[in-house]
Image 1 (cartoon, rainbow, N blue to C red):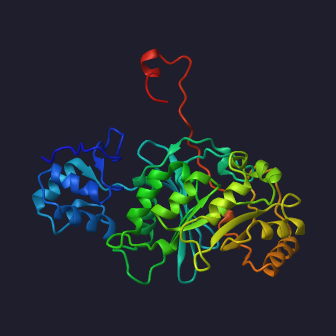
Image 2: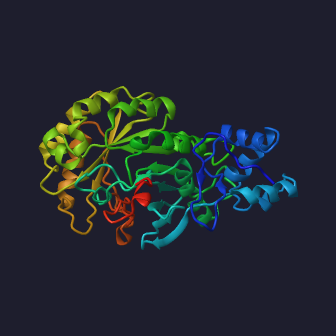
Image 3: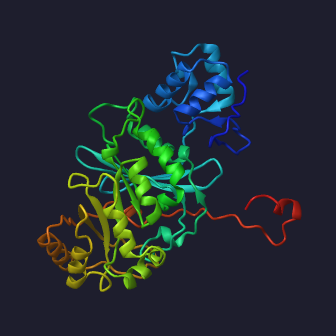
Length: 384
């Protein structure tokens, strides 16, 4: 019988009565080495497990044919290879896919895949809900429930690969080519789990998605931006959305803590940023709010000296949204001003609007648990 893996780590355990085994999805190389040692196996077993889990994407220990049958049986008794459960699978008329994924504790988050002709980007979530309350974003109307673990972040990609049959990790022609950490939540408020997950995803002997094909988006958690460049070296996208602090304070309330000047100083110092790896400034186009020619000219002045490009995002409506999208003519004029100033500023073509999968539309019904006033004291002592 394989001993329970007790080494100090952020291993995810299922919490249902149906399956109390330790989930190996989300373990890094060092953790798999410790796991192997804890069950009396040599370190090379960790390399074998890594290959089967992250390169071949197996969901059953019996498929690990380089392991002896007794070891496979023993592993299956104490460990699992569980992905998040697909609670809902929606496909847009434009080919976009959206999954509502349910985790072991019953909480849910959304993941979106946007295919192109010869590639595609998977938009992954980092939290259930969000700590921020950006007024143009549907996710911001859902209070933070909890951070996602590294395994739950990696599990989103593995679920998508399961859906499109992209195992083992193909070296060339594959549809899921890019990762954007732009889904539900602020990734820099869940920094450790996001870093761990992306390192697993980037490992060349596993899932093997290059850091050049990964973009992390932040609303502007200034102290953490430099660490992203130093520890991950992925592309950086910044949700800017305004040219003045007065407007951005309303659209992105985090700006009150880290105003535009501090945010742009952090971008100027971002490790590795150059003309080949420009920082993307995301800018949602809101009618009569941030879409004037004066706003465009101010933006060009603000980012002077930063290797930068803009991503102009037509506002994607959601129930009760307080804004409207700028007109096509207004967006074209805005883009032209930025182009004349020397910046690339494409207008993003909305994808997945019909299934609420477009930028700013993601949300789940998960709610933070609160202790009831009538709950007995013993029960109330449990973590909220």
